[in-house]
Length: 116
Image (cartoon, rainbow, N blue to C red):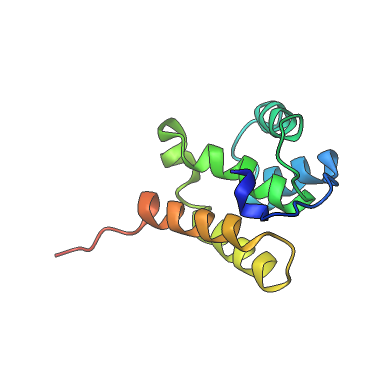
């Protein structure tokens, strides 16, 4: 996963507290217990990835969106989360690869079923 940053990965500069808040409030719409978001985001923060604050928030939220037991809890907020990620991508606040993976994963897992 480090390859998403290329030959010269950025310095690890994520603001852990801000990333937790962004993931919990903006992406997960406060539907996952804050303690779970804090735990996962802190684990990612302590890992080898040189996350920015927004990359860390997106990666943390994505882990919850990918967890089958949370599908029903998060299904109503996934469109807003995808819009938020798109806004961050347009503003250059997240790495394009993370934005693309977020969108592709949520599209695959949450796309609406066609009514026939």
